[in-house]
Length: 90
Figure 1 (cartoon, rainbow, N blue to C red):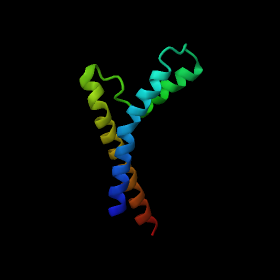
Figure 2: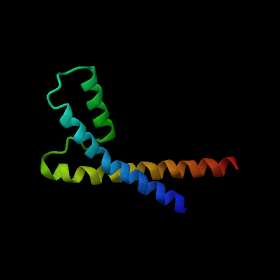
Figure 3: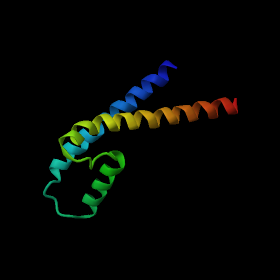
Figure 4: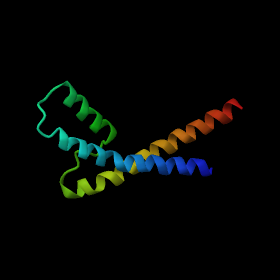
């Protein structure tokens, strides 16, 4: 159980820092012309950070925390599914 909690914390950390990483990377693409690369980039951003389009400063401040919660919940679900499958096959 201890390892599962650590994995959930790591998933939450990845979820927290994902929008920060994408925000920094977006500064580099701020003036980039529309291309296949920029379309792929923004599709990745919106896939990994579904809260990216929250309006205003509150959205910008809440986004890492909401994303962290989403990643932690998803990983907890994956961990639960893995435990059930392992118990079923044993």
